[in-house]
Image (cartoon, rainbow over all chains, first blue to last red; front, top):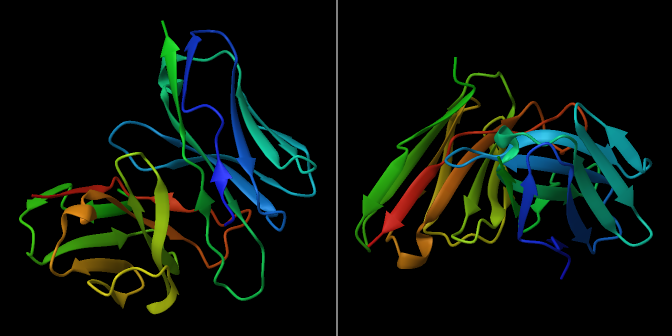
Length: 115
Length: 116
């Protein structure tokens, strides 16, 4: 079936370095993608999103890249800080006019920032 | 000033029992959700409600019965609990249906359910 998955379940990065978290999706009809951050003991928190008519979007220290050709999504975090340690999820959805759209989440990548 | 709150935070119970988890949002949103996160952190939608009306039911066993008394509350009642129900359950809300820009889902802190 359709799924959203991640290549790397865990990632350790030195504080101050940049990190890249990858996500693959298989539903070619997906047109909206979101990255979430989930800290220990908390619910997922929205980081950044991107629509399929874009290939790059930047936020504060974060950049999302979308490659529709290979159905790949990545989250780049610049100058990582200890507070960036968390599990990161990509999520995708397919737009429609019926109101029954849902977010499909990937399996998550645990990012650990080494001081 | 909590946006999405859930009670209880932790729930430990025996197999076969019936339990409820409550969720409230004070954001004025129309849409609310229940998600289940398993031990491998996989997060999957269970239900969505819009203005007290059930919209999404992701083939969840009928032992799970959501109830929305008003659009600010979405409770989850679980009958005859099984070992496989052990998970973290997240409530979420968004201004309206259809995930999209400017329609962010806000998640609660989660309820960790352990069935013994």
